[in-house]
Image (cartoon, rainbow, N blue to C red; front, top):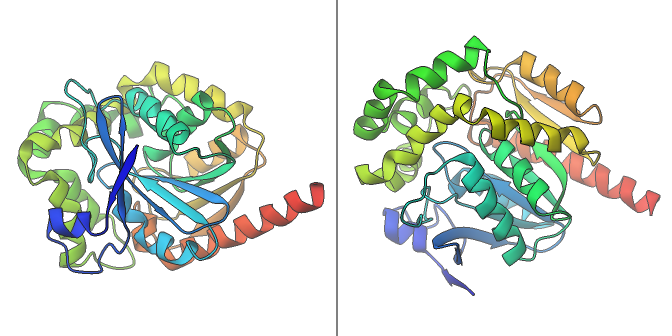
Length: 303
């Protein structure tokens, strides 16, 4: 059974009224108390965040798209308003199993996955675990394959996934306090927005998930190989929203996506950094609407 609270994010994190104007809902999955929002009616968009964000990162998209779509955005265990069960490792393969069960518990079917960063491989992994739940992909900057041997990713994983990165994450919440604001290209995050991203990690004990993810960039190679196999077999509609100035995912990764999923169409988002849903929300909404309307029209004709 799920439960809901109208202003849980504002109450728990001390956010300004109306800064996250969606009902917070919770469902218990494998000992986790998973937070999600479920707004609007129509075809379902299932939104997954990456590191170190939470469903708050999709607030601009939800506010617009809920007029025509059902927008479901969850927080991975240990992020945002979700509480992780004791002993949870915060690895992406573990997250995938939780996401797949959330899809089943919420009876989500024929949905479009909207994701970037770690949300991409985790969501695609869940797609493979829960057949028929996700049938379209609308992905921002992300990947879905092992990166071992690519120095661009290996140095980052070794540095921020190692002892120095652990210290920086646990003591200074470096992913929120430095990486997020430094990668914005079009605008700066406001004090209120930074508060929303810092609040889930105010307790240092909750900062472990931020450190696990960079270590898993290379540590999860075997699991990422299974994600790549799922992506290679995917033949459904797919769209990529690709920022031009992301420090992580480059033109090289976009080219690999085109080889892996040749049916994918692309929107290039100029002068935009890693957190595209924040940096260029209006352009992201427009690109998603265009893709979704086009696909619905094509599927209606095919039917």
